[in-house]
Amino acid sequence: DFCRAFGSENVGLSTGDSGVRRDAPVVVMTTEVFRNMLYDGDADELRKVFAVVFDEFHYMNDPYRGTVWEESVVSCPERTKILALSATVSNGDQVKGWMRRIHGETQIVASDFRPVPLKYEFADGSLNELVPLFKADDVGPGSPRDGELRAGNGGARERARKRLRLNPRLA
Image 1 (cartoon, rainbow, N blue to C red):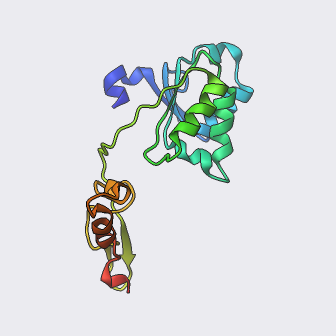
Image 2 (cartoon, helix red, strand yellow):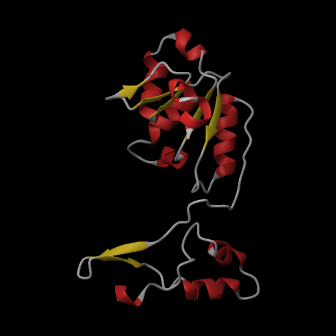
């Protein structure tokens, strides 16, 4: 998609071990590569960075890799725009406050829309197939019915609990 939007000559990839057009104006890279660029990078190169997009930003809470996201935000030049993406950050206001203190003005843009719906399945080795975890397809954290669990009005919470019952094949 980036190559179509910006032209393949303007898009690069850097994973640390390998890369393609690492000096392109738009470079997709792992958070670890970006953090190392901040620590070891050339100041002139860092001045060229207009924006950083962190995907799966909820990994900041991961005990093994989370410090990489945190160090990247803390070390990112203030003039660099940061876009942190996550479908599962439950403490957005806390993250916003922290980022504001560290990096400056911060806004939250929230949406319930999921372009790729979450599915909860498990592998049934005896049948060699994926089996739904819940009786209903449209339940589970992040699902269209997830809000019903939080609603607590008009019996919605109890209806949602019933729908969240595990698939009988798990018993």
